[in-house]
Amino acid sequence: MIPAPSQPARQGKGRSRNRVKILAAAKALFLRDGYDGVNLERVATQAEVARQTVYNQFGSKDAVFRAVMEHHWSSLPLGDLSTRLEQSLGSDGDPAGFLRQFAEILLTFIEDTDQVAFTRLVIAESRRSPWIAEEFYRVGKEPLTRALTECLRRLHETGKINCPSPVLAAHQFLGLIQEFIIWPRVMAIGPDVMDVPPFDVVVEEGIATFLDRYGVRD
Image 1 (cartoon, rainbow, N blue to C red):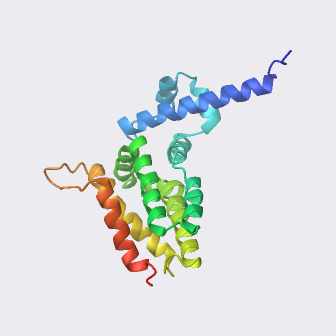
Image 2: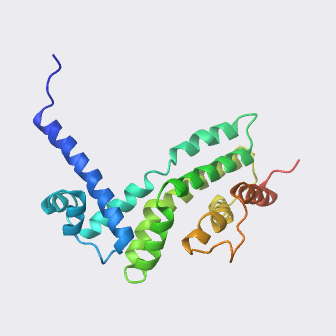
Image 3: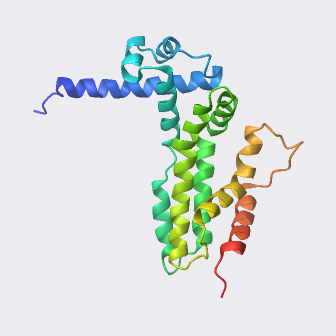
């Protein structure tokens, strides 16, 4: 016979399920009503748990919001970058292939999550609460930029690119891509105002521009 889960194990699973429910409920409320429009009582009601459960797991609305941001950014698979990089470091690999796959990872994250709505929320709330923008950067943009920086550093060290300032280069490449794939959406700029090129055109032109500056010439 398979032994029944112990009491602590059952409690741990229940706590984990509640946490997921709370984070999903809180995210929906924050995106709809803004930071000031949400309290622990409303989060508990939306998550269908007791208010004390929310308080016991997080302690405050600030902590809930921080956890929501961490959970949101956790779906960005930064670990995949190492795999893509190893392919680009091989004899048949090339920096363009790595940058192309990096852009695809970023686009998938933007398309599959509430990144646009979340960015709008952070911009709106950070004027009154600067810590929100700082935390959003700390748990998301900073790790993303750091991961790309390390990959560019390795490409430089192995002679694939000539990039002595990978931090600057990482920000530059992100700017080339995000200027078209996220900021027009964040600002709700429609096609009647700005003609946004297709994603593949944006990426290929961004890669060409980047490698024109940092590519290794024979």
